[in-house]
Length: 624
Image 1 (tube, rainbow, N blue to C red):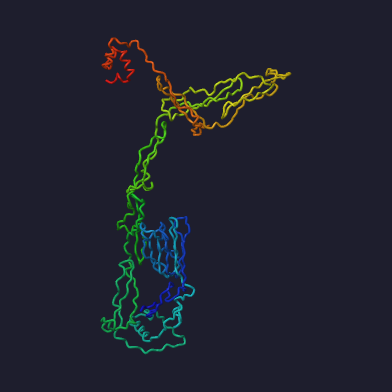
Image 2: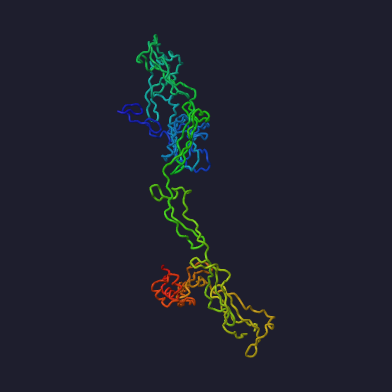
């Protein structure tokens, strides 16, 4: 059968979360929460206060970060990570309990830091966070006694048989023999009464009623054997304040000879008390922190670790000045690292053609970041500083320029008399034609030409005729009208000298007009020189669709596009007659048949015959 927490065989009682044997978890209160505040300033920020008497303390960072937890007593004494010095993970004493400081491996783990302690604390403690990056959240939890918890100081005043937290304590008994043994032990060891109070486990001191007089026991005879200190245990540490305990053996009171412990009363054996030993401080040492994450995800990077000079005393490790560690070689704080081989840049295509046929343009090529397995990955996987250019300028040489002009307008600016017709002229770079055209130069084609729709008939006095049609079908143009000084007579008007009407305001005879936006129109260059002087050649010109602001457009009517190429010089070629080119021999036809015209002598002697056959068979004279 099992033994319960009350030390009874077959009992099923267990200790609850409040530490009460057989309790129902109501004797204490769990305090928990998450600190999620957004912090802006770097440094120490208070997270939570742990009150006196707290147990089962758990302070845990919810995920890994570059922040650190710190612990300090209310009196201002730093326990963990104080004064900007980061302690190594381990056990640290503070507030009357032992705290376990955990910091998981920085590379392989995503868990955060934590403080754990069983408690109870004997003073108020403050938990801080050393803020260096956004707060991932800090979970805190501890247990404090409830209102119905009986203070340990009251246990000595509990009467025998009184219930404690719902449990009935074991009845007390007065054992006068034990009391005599206690007094005897005190006498033998030379200690004052109460120095070694012997209290059985889970027993409370007996409580005598105030009106009861203790019974006087007869003095006992000195026993033949008693307990004697014969030495001490080995010190727990070789330096930095350890502890040791006295060793008691059973000896003969007369001969002081050691005998079996069964000869002595075990209930009178003194309880060993802890004694300090080896109080001198331990030598300082270099405390080596864990390596940080590699600064590069691939390729050669750097990682860092913290190196502190530490010294141990009284089971506490303290950070000291670095000169105390000068007798030791200081470990490196930085190291190179490489998690994997970096991806590399690969040029997948050659340069494209230049974006323009002349002038300065651009050309491109395909550049990809490829892993060491041959897969195309994001550009961030490669070193951006080493990325080959995938675009560059290209110079195709100076561009030719040509005059571009529209057709003449259909309308004359005047309905009668002299007027003008207009067209648009603009000098533009020729990006299409491969003809050896030169710059536009100063020979700008005319933009206006005269026109006459016949004589105008007289109309009327200061009398203005109708406005003529606008000089352009679209865009800005001009309108004109005739203004004359007339005098009306019977049945007709007499035209007078304008001086006769000078006292009147003369109406304007010209004004600007605008019928509609021109939109896109076809422009073309002048025809190039014919490619052949006879027997049919061709000439070309460049045709462009331009909008009102003279930029390229696609809105022109394709059916109205002027021709870009046309035949020219279709007449037959008439060979030039050279008076000096004659046959000097009657049988030159034999020279031709024998194909001797390739020789200079025969070519001169039979010039006419050789020339005729050469015109009929191009390349005949040059075969040899």
